Image (cartoon, rainbow, N blue to C red; front, side, top):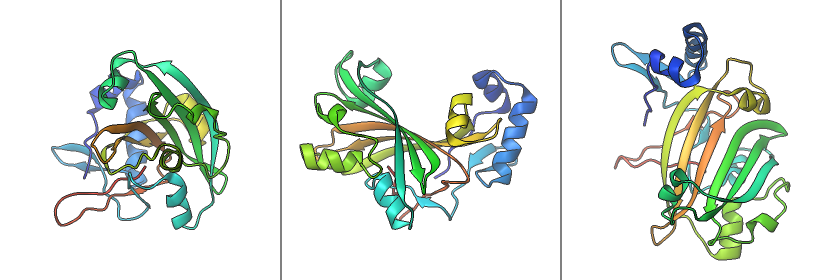
Length: 223
């Protein structure tokens, strides 16, 4: 339910910034309720009861509409590329396979809230690059269902927090140094084959997340 953040020393090394910058960002994360300090254990992402439900089987569009918001998006990039091993391994496709990379800035009521990048094997959805991804309510999962009869059945999610890069901060309209929530997901179909890999970078105040846990210990994910 909670992801542990790296130590201060690790964050300094990872982002090549000063300890003062890291401490400022951590204080801001704590102030926003994004992370919590546990004595002797470190910093953990807070399982907050408010915000948008984290569920991989629902699209950003349907989640926004369900919460009374108008969804939108700005296309940042779409291309077919030869994937590296860090992409082909999670997607369970041969090394060097072609994948479609789809990067979008997601909007709520015309306000930027999430940077989303999806990778999907080009062989599974070859016509995605021909669609107009500037359409405000276009959903990847809806297109996969309608065009290819691909239906996500379960998801695997990793939740964390970190400092935003300069480019990320500009797109999400975050002051620097700014902190972001990150969600990395893989969705699987009914045959338990990976459909797509997703990287989500959330504005922590405009788009907070809620994790719902059942009595069995399973929890839902957002996508």
